[in-house]
Image (cartoon, rainbow, N blue to C red; front, top):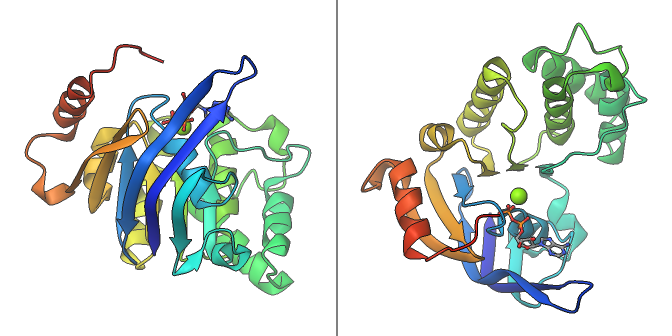
Amino acid sequence: MIRIEQVCKTFRLESGKKVTAVQDLSLQVATGEVFGCIGPNGAGKSTTIKLLLDLIRPDSGNISINNLPSNDESSRARVGYLPENPYIYDFLTAREYLSYAGHLSGLSKTIIAERSNLLLEKLKLFQAANRKISGYSKGMQQRTAIAAALIHDPELVVLDEPMSGLDPLGRKLIFDLIAELKQQGKTVFISSHVLTDIERLCDRVGIIVQGRLCYESQVDQLSAPLDELFLQVVQQAGIEEVR
Ligand SMILES: Nc1ncnc2c1ncn2[C@@H]1O[C@H](COP(=O)(O)OP(=O)(O)O)[C@@H](O)[C@H]1O
Ligand SMILES: [Mg+2]
């Protein structure tokens, strides 16, 4: 479903200095697989996701989704995306926002109503659905953004730190939702710092440090608990600066 081949991405800062965010990174995610992407802050996880979705372009390398190059917009027709810092129109209600997201995906009014009801129910937003998002808690806003990412029942779901800002209850809701996506055979690419969730949800995990994929394994073949491996891999990479 996802193929990333030898991708490099460097940003040029205003000072003229260059930051290499992703370096010679290759990874593949099979259809139906749940892939966990972990790494310290500033490792290049969000940049990798943005490259995959053609929100930014690589300096070199190739990226495809379902065998379509990522710069072909049809590659994203069946992709749902939760950005790291979702921007949602908070003057709308959750129901209006889901309707807007559904229309952008070309869904009919009937399907939008069906999917909205299902997702609002699942994400425990049903009671608040007709209230303005501006009055929601951080967790409710995050859950609204996740519902919007799933409105068109995507085949590939890309979640950039979905658990951030959620209380344990909200985290459990998202955990169960991702487990259900997996059961439905969807492909999921998830970046997170919640390693216990990654270990329990994912089939395979990759650790990115300073723009490089430094470690990759099936979760059931990990040689140590993921939090220990994480520290080992980061130490081996010789990180000096904590961002
Ligand atoms: N638009 C940008 N301009 C300049 N530097 C950027 C930009 N986006 C990301 N970076 C830098 O690229 C590196 C990787 O960032 P990012 O992919 O956001 O990391 P992560 O998601 O793993 O925390 C960081 O050093 C970050 O500061
Ligand atoms: Mg990030």
